[in-house]
Amino acid sequence: MINIAKLKGAIVENGTTQEEVAKAIGMDRSTFYRKMKNESFTIGEAKKIADNVPLSDELAIEIFFGKKVAITR
Image 1: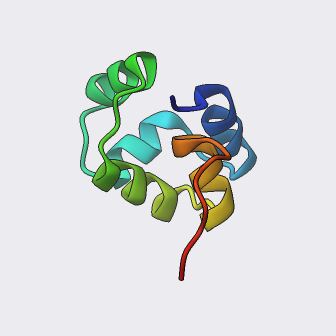
Image 2: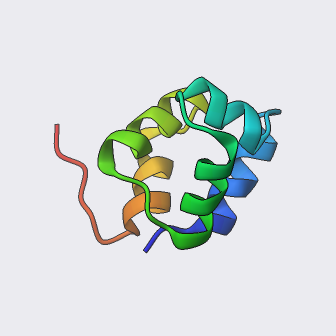
C-alpha cells in the first residue's frame, strides 16, 4: 500500500507540485491524480517519481512499499 500522505508531503517539501511531477514523468495530470487516489503506480512509475521529486532510496521504499522491504545493493 502506497503512503500517499508521505508522498504528497515529499512533493511539497521539495518545492514542486503534483502537476509538475506528472508532467516530468510524462503522465497526464488527471491520470497522476487518479493513480494517487487509487494507489496504483507501477514500479516504473514509482521509479520515475522517485527520480523526479527527488526521493532518497529509503524514502521511496517507505512510500511505495512500506518498511517491510529491505534494500539490497
